Length: 213
Ligand code: ADP
Image (tube, rainbow, N blue to C red):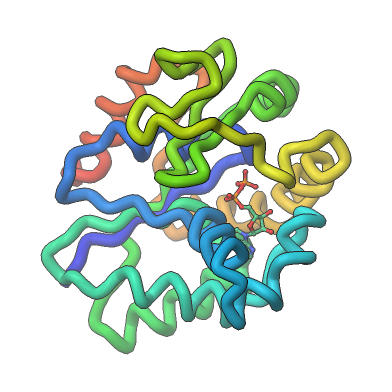
């Protein structure tokens, strides 16, 4: 049986950066990143979801499930799903699928962040188009300005990291994801991490949660 966690937060709270600091047997799977890959490949799913993602709206759950579960087949691994589920509908479907394969969700991790801090985080964000690593112009700069440390290619800004779309993504979070957080809290499996702490501290807390302490 795999150990499965989900991580939720407002956009820009730093889920991706936190995930990039974990050890090799822990696999973070970002729903948004997988969708962007499909869009770049211009695959069947990519074409269907392109406009929805560009608007900052949620794509239909069946597409997410299809691309997600292809990447979760190793039962010896610890998986952290970054950005799935995002609402109650997705959480209920997810429970059904886990039940069928004799798995369960160990914990939902809420990386909690003040909405006021988001603009700075998002508008300075840059990603590598090759390895998807996330940087920040001032908070987490690459060694060479605008160049990925690992791939040596020019960093880009995500198309949905603009003011109008960010507003919509925050709205979607408040309307759809907050009830999901309450649902997991009531179930007794919610763990919260304060996103404003130093990265090292957050990694420590997250590792403890993953170990089940
Ligand atoms: P963020 O969390 O910063 O909004 P992500 O990379 O996680 O960024 O997601 C980018 C976009 O991908 C979302 O705005 C949405 O359009 C789509 N998306 C990601 N995860 C899901 C999901 N679980 N269900 C539906 N759409 C999703």
